[in-house]
Image (cartoon, rainbow, N blue to C red; front, side, top):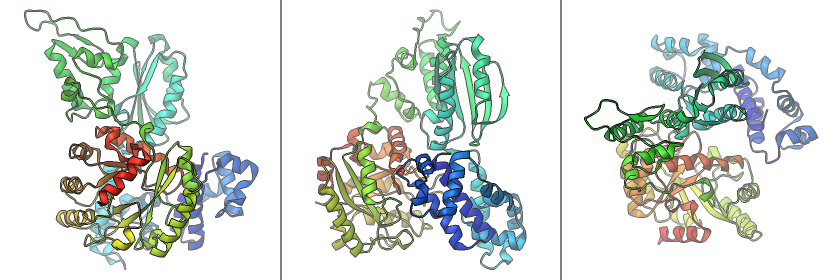
Length: 582
């Protein structure tokens, strides 16, 4: 097991102990150990092999033995015993919005509810209303949470689907019988939420059995749904359905294009092909027989996707843009933008350290950023009101700034920018007064409380905040958590207009649970001249890598390097930060 898998199991064990009513210190120790393992800058397997895991702060002897067992064997007796000691449905219930382990334990102890189905029935029969601390409103909220969970049960976050797909693809690509292979579908288009995985392969017919054997017997496969001559379907251990299609090599460009989608993009492509007297499908581009008196000109041979677009008088459309948002028209005018790439980024700005709720120190975060080849890193720990996240008092800010100054004095070709993630209070004012805000190089403002506002209230609240001269970036604008909760109701068109008017930036929060601002709004922000920051909201060194997901959203929103603040040089970033305040 890698450190991510070990961290997930430790976190789950902490939750299971909470469900059992174990000592809070024990539960907290497992949750803390999960964060410690996730934040390790050294290789976990090396630490286990050398015994160094026992020297890591926050990892006692018992936890060290458990981590060693998990890392070396992929399982642990204590974990298996703990899981079997409680109904499996309790962990599922914890996933319901508004229900934590403590509440689930009460429901299990008092009403013997041990599954989501039983919980739904109990709410409908108003059995929870009789329990202390619950009530009718709680029942309503739980039922809404169950409905949301059911709607998203077959949906998966992009990184989870990407990781699963790449493991399968790597095996397929290593088969000498495979000529070409690629991930298709919404995953290739880098949608934030994925339904299933599509993989397209080209190979000779005589080799299909061997390829399907390798696919269906892959270690990541849990169940085989169907197996045919051209397509096989499986369920992966990650819970995601995966389809593998095998076509002839001359069909590969068409199959890849068709199964990449989107459906709306495909419709536009087929409509355009029809104007040439051709039919376009997943197999080829061909003449429509019997159409008109004059036989259409034969379509050219297409060796790859670019040839398909060229045949239709278009320039190549990157997969991320294939959402029927004007990309066909732009392609016809040769106006497809040169989309941002991960390598274009020179740093990022929304990151946390041990000064607030981060797991790594300033020095560790800076070292990780330098290792990624960046020129700068912006640190934006929480402001004082975020006590739950170790929010910084003005005195603590001064201490952090002294440390940053000291570190900056040791760097060559690298800089830490002084920032803060400042809470937007319910009335739109900020958690720090202007006399403190002026200490920072830049300020990220975000909402972390009072989500149940009307759209007008939330919009007014945010716009008032970004009018402050010291505010630089609006953080996670809608507060959404993908597959967990909807964002608060806010008129993002008005917010984007205000950001444009006042010269402020809006972030694409790259954390996989957020990916907020939504890509559908990014293009509008670009059109309004709003500068975008791609920020990982990193709470540990590994979290810095989440910018890759933000780049995917930026590409879906048609962004170029010139539109993204952290694709600029240090000097240009400095100018921008100062210009915002002028």
